[in-house]
Amino acid sequence: FPPDKSRIHELQGTYDWTAQLNDKCFVAAPVSCFRHAPMTDCWDNITTGMKVEVENFDCENFSEDFPNSFWVATVLRISGYKAQLRYEGFGTNSEKDFWVNLCSSSVHPVGWCATRGKPLIPPKTIEDKYKDWKDFLVKRLTGARTLPSNFYSKVHDSLRSRFRCDLNLEVVDKNRICQIKVATIKKIVGKRLHIKYYDADPEEEGGFWCHEDSPLIHPVGWARRVGQTIDAPPAYIDRCVKGLRDKDDATEDLFPLPDHFPFAPSQSFQEGMKLEAVDPLNLSAICVATVMKVLNEGYIMIRVDSYEEMNGSDWFCYHMSSPYIFPAGFCSSHGILLSGPKGWENATFDWEEYLRTTGCIAAPLSLFNREIPSHGFEVGMKLEAVDLMEPRLVCVATISRVIGRLLKIHFDGWEEEYDQWLDCGSSDMYPVGWCQLVAHKLEAPPSPVKNGLNQGDENMSLVDELTASQPETAHQPPVLLELLPPCPPNVALHSQQCPPAAPSLPASLPGPLPDCTPLPPHTTQEMNGWSNHSPSPSHVIPRLIDQSCDTRELVPHLWSVPEMAEFLRVNDCGAYTDSFISKNITGAMLLNLTKDEIMDLTGMKVGPSLKIENLITQLKIKVNPAQERMKAGFKKHL
Image (tube, rainbow, N blue to C red; front, top):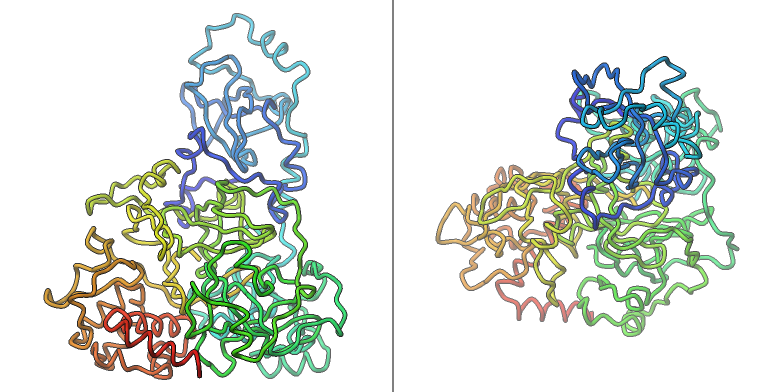
């Protein structure tokens, strides 16, 4: 291991870091920053200057399948699990330098060849440089450090999962985030579990991916113990009531001890308290929220105040020690735009006025987890991160902001609205090279698009990406317009405040996983806010995630059914166009849909419904901004 990616169908097209690794400005987050990553406890002992025995690629008749030539190399640079090596004897000549995964089967401690009777053969380029290569190596290796002899047994041990396939456990229901659902582990890759709900169609590929340390998963009986709603077969409920366990039930000993700080029941959250929280339906936003219910063992149910009333189906469970909930005023004190309640302007939202208007109180500062560990993450560091709105995907990412223990993860090549707020201890972030190590596909950044033509350079460097980006404006986050993807890895439908996020449910911060649809190729015209694929040239179709679009010719009340479908498609809701078309929804009908009608059209999926409802609201504002602002102001004072 890592296995040959060309031999595994799932790994075809996986991203290769090499082009970025060769950039002298490239900085990867150290393996030791990821407490859940393989070898994290001992990786600081792996340093530059170490000597290793490695396959000799510079030889005649080299075979990757049956390597029979090895040579000694020096570790020059380390980036995540990747190391740049130089064969001994090349001196300052870098023409044959190469990158390898230090945990791969092609790298060995010095002495490995001798114990296996394999010869050390100098590279062909320099084979005549020295007459006595044995004497040369003795001098170079005297006093040098190498990998420990048990290095690879340690790698194997660190990759072994505590779980096994066919175990039952309890996990957040991705389609109804207020409840827990019984599921079964179907596959394990690098300690990431592929889980399928008990009532899922066995013929379908669907399911749910998360790391084994994720707070989204719980042992059998957890929901009953803490007072959380659960969807489970009657036999399962009966077993939990009687305290019985099946041989395939995941028990408490398989789950890590929670990092919950001590709390007294008298000093706990109370129903109705206000706070700030990362939106479980849109991980790029931190929102005003309310404690709706207090469960057992320090768990609480919260609801984002900007959601439409959904009869409790949009509540979400956090522990009171969660790093994703914050006291009122957190965003303001750290320069983060807080997403305010429905009817309130984000830019002018004032906590004091809101609490006075609602008659509520803010949760006391003493109730929140204020511990900030020394994590080592810094702005600009590269890593591999899970798209938590489609967690089967692991994508190339960069840390764009660090606030205490909170990290803002930016997916390379994507607009900022697709970012995710993650805790420094999140098990959904991995070092560079992790995907290769565990044989998991790494999604490449979208290729740059210039003048409407795909340039086809997937291995884009950070310098290329920043060159293609556009300046930040006051009303819109920075958007990498030049990098608008011809086909994103997966675009998920988010909640009200933000447009859809491509790469993004968290291990530490879950959210629903709505159906997703790829974006069609975009042209320069689309990047300026309009789609040029409108079925009728006389009716423009806006792409509302681009805030700068002109509204002078916008007439949605005249849109035909195909034009209405085009509006959904270019705004990343194409998965639901068939449903809207089957009901003959025109533009005029779209503007008047109620939240219940939208829910019916999306198959009762909360995330997509909130997204489409927000698109309709934005559309109305584009057409008649004064009237819509007046309505919002009226609702604010009700």
